Image (spheres, rainbow, N blue to C red):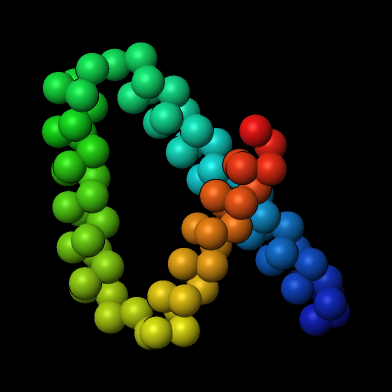
Length: 83
């Protein structure tokens, strides 16, 4: 396997992972649109609290934080283009 093949394999894997994450977000949006805030609010609070705790524990670099922000902006842009 060449370096190029490894890169393509990783790129394909990362894109598939990204698509799964985006679909999970869309499913969550559909869920909160049909359920009252009293049902999904505590779930969302627990999720956000866990994510914040995990982020604090990782000590991510500023570069990684910028990358994450960029991916989030791309997701918003992609969704805006579809609508």
